[in-house]
Structures are given as C-alpha cells and as structure tokens.
Length: 152
Image 1 (cartoon, rainbow, N blue to C red):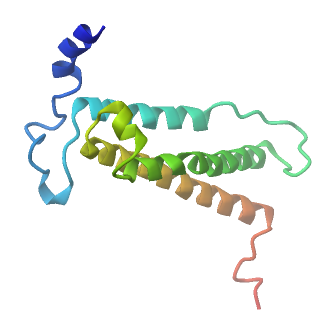
Image 2: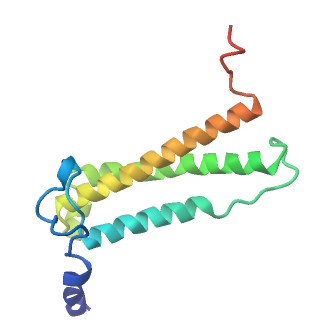
C-alpha cells in the first residue's frame, strides 16, 4: 500500500493549487497557496460541516414553545450551530500548538498544521456568526429580545 501511496503523492498531495505559488507567498499578503492535499483536506472539512449542519431536522407539530415550523427549525439550526463550535474548539487549539501529539503521529509539517488551523478557525467563526444571527432572529421573532423601543 505504501508503494502505491508514494506514486500518488506527486499527483494528489504535492502540487500547488494556484500556479507556481507553492514556495513563494501570494500577492497582497494573502498567505501561502495550499497544496492539493491541503486543499482536499480543507474542502472535506467544509463539506462535512455543511452536510452535518443541514440534515436531520425534524419538526414536531404542534410544538409547545414555537407556534410554527419555521421557528422550531430555526431554533434547531441555532442550537446545532452553537454545539459545533464547542466540538471544534479543541481542534482549533490543538492545530495551533507547536509541539503536539498530532505532529508526531502524522509526520506533517508545522506549516500544514497552521494552514489547517486557519481553515478550521474560519469554519468555527462561521458557525459562531450564524449561531448569533439565528439566535437574534429567533429572539426578536418570539419577542423575548428587548428592543430599543421598549427600554426606558
């Protein structure tokens, strides 16, 4: 199996995604271009997060707290988008550290871990932002959020 993997690495892991920018940084301080293997890993993380946050919602009618299905599904989205960052926080911290067990086990470079740390942190931030926006929409819709008109 290792012989086949070694023959596939020059085609699937090592080439850069953007031209010849593997060794030199991208213009306008955009960082370094990822290799194809790093891009595939980041794409799998993004796709898994999209799929896992988009499926499996089941509305129960009538619901005790929400009068309609829209509010109930919005609450489920809010709760799931709040739980995912809690699960991703250890990854964000672990991928950012210099001397960790994963570096030793995987034999990847620290720059690969930093690139993956950035992508996981971006996904983390998107989850937190969507969670906050859906919570605000849900609380304003239910009337449990004190607007500026009601405050003295």
